[in-house]
Image (tube, rainbow, N blue to C red):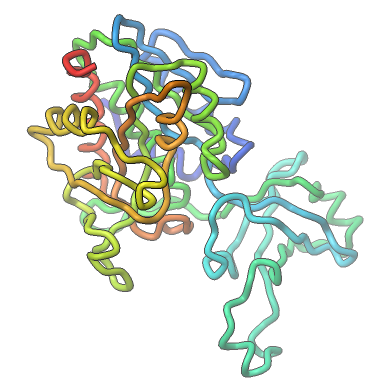
Length: 347
């Protein structure tokens, strides 16, 4: 039996910042193998798992990478300065424990800054910027840090573990987009009587420019595509329904438009297909003004590819304590599976 919670925990606890997705790719390759006929890794590092069939050719995309940091340089005292990989809100970084993925293996460090006791009163009211933070690995000096394996280019991720919450909710890091990876693998396990050729693509470097989706879509040139991702909810303090009408526990989000239309405006033909697939599945329609997904890169490939987006309602995205509903995850996978089963009637 497919255990989505076990797989989500495994993928959430694993580490793979943009450009360094190899560890995640290895886990996914093992998990997806029973459900596909062929697995390839392309030049960019995208994992392409294929269920062979006829027409149409469908591309399903889920990005493997997570946001993180990269060491920029190590100062004379052994403290590492860094750049951000992907979209961090600086306040969520402060005082985190991190893992430096060195050539010698994982090394723990903490994100530090000037303590409040040493701050002037006016400084206490200011947001501390990432540029003023550093990573402390316990090194005596620069040479000591380098012996530990800390050097320019070392990737860094949050050190936090997956945990269950109440009412079948869970919390962890990298749900963006390990939840989409689970969604896609489970959808492949659910599919029955599929006539189409299905390429499940686990993409790289989405968080830094939708790069893997762009190259894999060019290679595959599918007739239609679906991207999976997470999306913000408007069901907790600090955000209003006018900012997001999506709620956890009410099923997957089907995108109509994102990034105020600058990302993707989903074709009516794709929406009609997804609504038909969701006849017996709860879902929510979303018009978003914030971020975008792999779908933006896919739908602009070659002469254009009809593309849709199915997203997981998720609280606190781009933090190490994101929260989602396991019920929503199940229904998201089910929607993808049902959509693929009837895709030949629409494209």
